[in-house]
Amino acid sequence: MKLKIIDEDFSVCKLKDLSKVDYSHEFCFVGKTDEELSLVCSTNLVPNNTIECDNGWKAFRIQGMLDFSLIGILSKISTLLADNEIGIFAISTYNTDYILIKENNFKKAIEILEKNGYELER
Image (tube, rainbow, N blue to C red):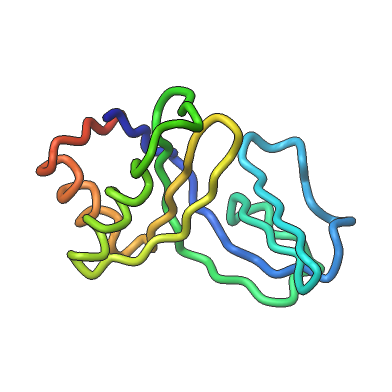
């Protein structure tokens, strides 16, 4: 399985509203529920109406379009990292999955994934 490292620093935010979000950037993930508005964006684009923010995330994407019938791709990666005490923040889009890992664990996560047969594109 091929993974692509994304050369960005990310932040995970809780927002007051969506009025200050820069949707023009390549990576902008918004989640809206009845309880909250969440945003994952480049750290240098965190809006000033953020209620809470957690900086220091790095990311990679599972390369290619994933068919909805494929089972266990995200589960295998998350289990492998969890077994090595590395937490993740996962985002799924229509095409694929993105996995964010805290910066202090990112190098270790990459080493573990490569050791277990994942091909990482930098």
